[in-house]
Length: 132
Length: 143
Image 1 (tube, rainbow over the protein chains, first blue to last red):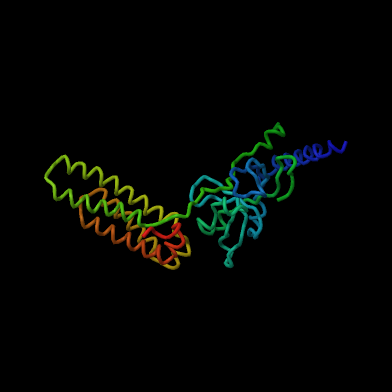
Image 2 (image 1 turned 90 degrees about the horizontal axis):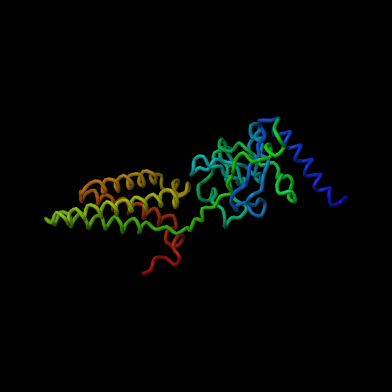
C-alpha cells in the first residue's frame, strides 16, 4: 500500500494540474532544456508555469522565471531572479549553476516587461514532484 | 475531450542556457586582420599584374570579413552594460568600426583601412580600460 501512495499522489496531482491547465489561460506546461539551473532543475524536468502573478506584481529575488532570450529572439530562458533593480524596471537573472550558465552576467539585466511567467511547480519526473 | 496525456505534454521548451562563454577576448585579433587588409591594399596599388591584383581583392575581402567578425565579438560578447556607462561612445565606436570594415571589404581605399585601424585602437583602449588583458587572456599576451 505504501508503495502505491506516491503513484496515487502523482496521478492525483496530475489530474489536478490537467484540469487547471485546461481551465486556465494563466497556466502552461514547459520542459527544461540545458543544465544551467542544476541542481534545482534538471534537463527534461517538466514544469507548470503561470503568468497571473506577474500581471499583479513584480518578480521577486529567488523566484524561477521564464524570460525572452535577449540575444536570440524566439528562445525562452529559464533562470532565477537574483535581484530586481531599485527602480523596479529590470531584473538580474542567474542560473543556479554559475559555471554552466549564460545569464545577466553576460547579457545584462533583463527588462521586467520580458518576464511574464513564473515557474510554479514540477510535475515530472514523479520522484521530484513539488513546488519550486 | 482532451486527454490527461495531451494536457500534460509540454507546449514549449525553456532553456536553462549555457553557451560556454570562454571569456577570452582581445581586439588584437581584429587588428591583425585589419593590418593584413592595409598591407594587401598597398600591394594592390603597387602592382600592375592583373592576376595578382585580383588575388589581392579576394584575400582582402576575406580578411575584412574576419575583421568585422572579431569587432562584433568584442561588441556583442565582451562589452557589458557597465562598460557602456564607463565609455558612453562605446556603441558608436563599435558601430563605426564595423561599418569601416565593410568599407574596406568593398573598396581598395587605403584611407578606409587606416580609419579602420584607428577605430580598432579605440576599441583596444576601451578593452584595456575595462580590465582587458588581465581579465580576458590566460597569462596576458605572450611577450
